[in-house]
Length: 363
Image 1 (tube, helix red, strand yellow):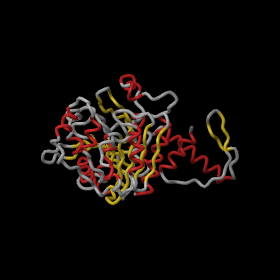
Image 2 (cartoon, one colour; image 1 turned 120 degrees about the vertical axis):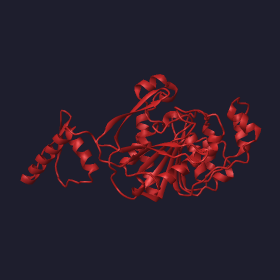
Image 3 (tube, helix red, strand yellow; image 1 turned 180 degrees about the vertical axis):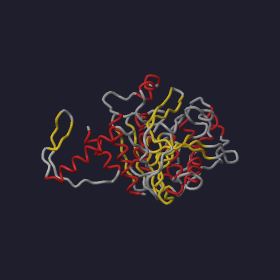
Image 4 (cartoon, helix red, strand yellow; image 1 turned 90 degrees about the vertical axis):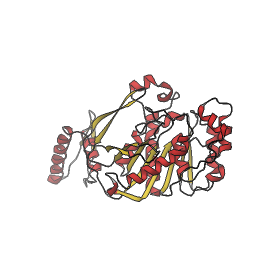
């Protein structure tokens, strides 16, 4: 336990110890079996001192700042949670959702570590929140990325005023553009962001948002087919045709996009074929929330840009959301519980490491 804590500190400080030793496990504590001379002994004393200090010091973690993109004309303000590399001490932070409080650990408003950092924008699904992918944001930040997670106005956990309105389908990619403008312009972290290294991650409607942001177009005929005879305000708007002349916004600053279980059935196939940036595509095996796994296999075939496609066995749509706190899991089992035998925590370790490798390769 002690050596593990020290190793974590060493990794975070980019400090490498050049010591050759054998290790022996005794009561879950790893101790040196052989130390070479006084140099090794001195190193061990220093290491133990370091561990004792660490054991009485709050753990360090990704920094977190909350910001708001100002309203612009008819477009409302956008709340953003920003994770970033930091050596600050962690504190418990609680965010309210419709199903209860969501508590995470973060170094609130701590100093940023690094310069010329790549930026990743995260977009949540229908009625979601900037906190539902906090584990992904934290690991990306620890890996050296600035992460801006959006609360899409009118389509969040605490504000569902437009979740059943077609306007959010046109404004979501504009939200992404506005957040990128803010992060590289007026935000407190603008000076440490490399504006030429911008990526995107999104789930569900957030995946739709990312595909649109990198070049896909909404297809009114496919949207009509998607609605079928579903009775909803959204589909009534689609059937009326009043929004057929609306356009979505693309942002060429996004150089790579990771997309999970997107609502892709409403997009024009020919526009998907014209996407140029690399894509990491993820799909659940069981689907959910209006996403049919077959539509994602079709999306995989329609993408001509360099991309990967990973269909996650035994997963459902909400398996891509962070592991729920116990209290929320009791209140929202359909979101928080997985199929028997599926380990969401283990899957997210794999997902997050794959995301880190992907963005490092293309940004």
